[in-house]
Every structure is written in C-alpha cells, then in structure tokens.
Image 1 (cartoon, helix red, strand yellow):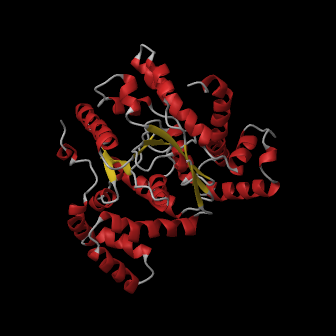
Image 2: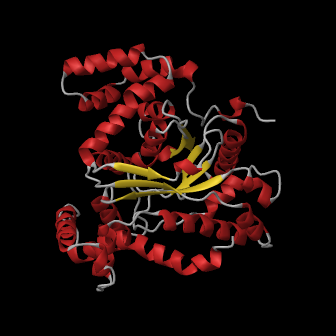
Image 3: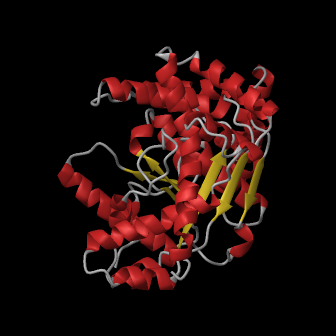
Length: 390
C-alpha cells in the first residue's frame, strides 16, 4: 500500500512545512519584487511581509492573503464572477473536476475563491512543471494547494511520473481530504476548442486496479466549464497560432509563459462564469465499458466530458457576434445588440494591433477563437437526444 511519502516530490506543501517555505520565499528577490508590484508603497509592502512572517498555516495564508489578492484582480480586471452547479455537490464528498482551460492561473484560482466563499474545502490544483520557471514559483504554488504534473521529461521517466500522478489523484479522491482540479488537456485552448485529451484519461486509469467501470466510478468525475466574456491573453493566443502556422515546430519560451501569466491577471476579462456539469453517471460508464477496445472507451469517455463542458459553457454576446462575422451569417442577431457588436469590434481592433502580424489572418483566428464554443454547443445540442439516456 502506498504511503503519503511516495508523493513528496509532487504533492502540495503541508502546514508543518509552511513557515520554512514562507521564510525561503521572503528571502527571494524575485518574490519580493512581485510583492512590491502588489503594494502601493514601502510601508504597505513591509506590513504585508510582516503579516506573512507571522502566518503559520496554509489556510490562514489563503484566507488573509490569496483570497484578497484574487478579489482585487477581479475588481480591477473583470465585470464580476458567477458560479452555478455547486449546490448539486456534496460538501462531504471529494470529486475530480475536469475543466476546460483558458487562463494559466485564474481558472483554478477563481474556482477555489468561489468554493471558499460557499463553505466548501478548496481543491488541489494540477500544474505543469514547465510553468515553474523559478524556484519561488514552485514554492508559491505548492503552498497554494498545487501538485506537480511533470512535463518535458524523457519517455521512460514520463511513464513512471504518469503512474505516480495517477496514484496521487486516486489516493486523494478515495482517501484524502480535498477534491482535485485538472485541465482537460495539456496547455490552454488557444483556438477556443475545448477538447479532452484521451491521454489524460489513460493516465488516470494507470492507477486503476479494478475494471473500467469501477475505476472511473470511484474518481467521481465532474466536468467543469469556465467562460470568460473577453478571452484572457486573446491577442497572445492569436500571435502563437500565427507562429505555429508559419513554423509547425515553434516552441514557446519560459519567458512567453511568464508573460502570459502576468497578462492573464492584468488584462480585462469582462464577465466570468463557472458552471459545474453533471457527474459522469454510472449508466454512461457502463455503456462505455461495453466497448471491447480500451482506446474506444477512452475516446467515448472524453466525448462525454466534452459534452458536459460544451453544454455548460456560458455563451456571451461576443461569442455569437464572432460566429456571425466568421461565417458571414445573421443566425444569432437576436443574441446581441448593435452596441454589443460595436464594442466587440473595438476590442478586436485594439487587441489585434498588439499581434504585429497580418491583420486579416489574425482577425480570422480571433473570430474563430470566440465562435468555436458556439459551434461546439450546437454540436452537443444536435447529439443531446442521442446521449440523453447515458
């Protein structure tokens, strides 16, 4: 039987490690520079640092420092956050939230702030090691309930690492104290197309010692949709898509990821909505388990997760405007006003000026990014009758 110590290299830090980790952070010049950007002057900065030194637990740290910072970000860069579906969940249960992924930091941070406000325990968050550019980022995320998903390692190590990750997630859901949040794919959706990678489900199944049905049933998978009225880092995503069109082997740098993290926090996001979908049902798992091919089972389960994400993705006027512009249609004119359209076009032109690429091609990528969630929703609606008995 696995001991919790098996997971020391990837798990979040514990309360008994907090003081030493915080001391290390406060000695780090880059962490101090980040704190300085959050405060208006030296007096406020020193007061915050004194408060951090006096803090002795992760719960107090998140309650007194992280939640206020996220709320400040929301007040400065959004029109508010809403969440529905939490009332269908049991506070005494642990779930595996499989979510679409649009912003590096905010997707999971906003979830935890809202769950905290609703009296739920915070979730543990999966974060890729490629984002842990500096030691202080590694320390900061791990005292914020994040566990590490190792990226960019040799194939042989990847197999061992994936199995350990799978064991950790299953251990937390079945024996731990917190739910788990993990993105449906590696990396954010740059083109607005939220697709669950079967490889993610195969990783989850690596720790399954029972059958397909029993193994996925005990994970209590709840698909989750997060929707932003204005795409976080939208112009950066278009720029990256353009570079990949020119060079299919294009690779982002660590600096690119860091800039995306900062931009996602600072850029205007409009309204934001989180919606919990229906937990993957026993009927769905039993139906999928009848397939003889494991690859086909994973594909069908991924589609089931996608369907819940598409159904529950909140479509804003910007999405419908982009659809009509991209497809040169008037199909959704009832979903927005001329003022909405003018505001979206003004936003589009401002953001695309930052791309420094061919404006016409960039415009098509921008519109497609906003229009695709509408296409995915329509695809789900057309299939809903066929899937309703799952």
